[in-house]
Image (cartoon, rainbow, N blue to C red):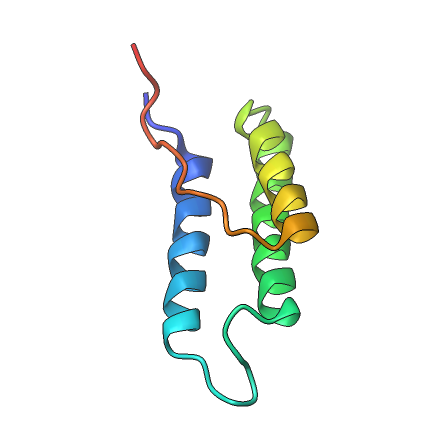
Length: 83
């Protein structure tokens, strides 16, 4: 079974990584603003997942909160559920 919201969250994490590779002076890599923006995107996906009744919402919110608190980028989410 595909975990659609995890796939969307992975896109956020990949875009964050790409933005950090192409950082400029006005937007330095791994700055608090960059982390805040990415965490907000994960929170938005978590909100959509919660509205849809998906269990993924709990994990997404927890990862966004941990990232915001620790500034350690989370690992990519597993997009396929084990059978």
